[in-house]
Length: 336
Image (tube, rainbow, N blue to C red; front, side):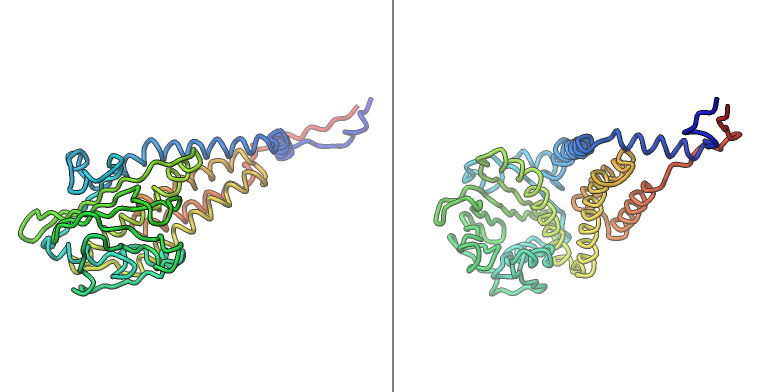
């Protein structure tokens, strides 16, 4: 007897593969998709916290430098949190002259100026030494934002000064009341390592966060961003002191790679939640998260950063393709 619904129907390998894919996607419901995205996000945060964070908190500094006392440590209310360092092939006096020009009302921060200005810093980009920008006395303010922004709280206060060697600033968080005592510290120490070479160290200690949400924001956003900007500042001072400043074009390519990888991260996450074959697209989502950490924190040269962007885009694109079905065997028709 002929089974009417299947009468005359031929089932091929292609049809079987497509049917299995559709059924698999159907079983992977909305809740499963959100759980998968959340799980990968937690794994990415775990990589950042356990592997990447210890590295960037002590970037460039030796274990001995991280452990030893630096000028200004006695002023810190909380223990040192970050210690970073860089070698510079220039006399210490010249390096300290560049450090002394730091500030929104002075020479800028020699970092990603475009990014600073996008958030309203109106940062100068001075690439020459100017003695008029290098004078400091205790109580002076290191401005990070224009004085008329952020209710006039966008500054740190000089609390310890050793001309030619040390600048230590007391810092505030956005939650601190105007006029309150510093809750954090940011130190700059220049040490000669030879007649024409120096070591520049930075050390910072922030106030304790008051909520778990604040702590999460610090770990996932503030600390990585602060490292990326401070690392570029140290490299900027190094380049200026050595006579080969980092070009604005290179900075632009690097920042564009940040934007591209973050955009691909968001797109790949959206495709897991809304697109077909979500299990396959999870690989692209995880790869995009790791690539974003590499491009923003490891900061390879722009050529390598953009190679990562292209590779990531290909992974996301290829994941949209149907799997190649097995070669169909003889067709099977159902008949009575």
